[in-house]
Length: 118
Image (tube, rainbow, N blue to C red; front, side, top):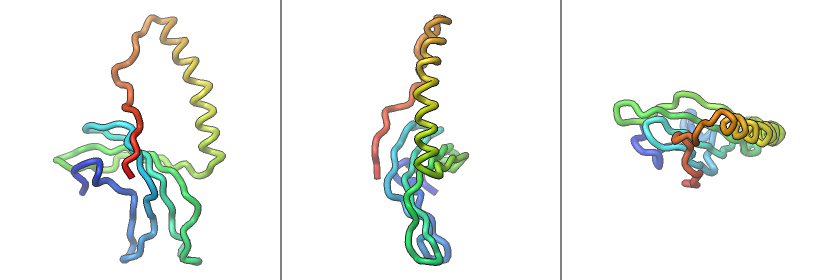
């Protein structure tokens, strides 16, 4: 169990074989609820070669001093990543306009700026 964000990894071994290898990670939010993005590759057992990289967004909760995975979302392709980005780019101007129109102030729950730790 990881007690710090630096200790969290997306590597996974099955019967002593590394079947998922982390290439990089970025901490999006810190605290008792943390959100991290991982760039990783999975092993193709048939060829013993690693497949093209994928992205996972993982939410962790700190419980009794250790981080535990609560949920995750895997971005399965570049096409899907670009679609998600397009939706964000369309929605954020709408969100800002809606907030300004209703007089809402900026949220103090803004995520920290991403930092690469891998």
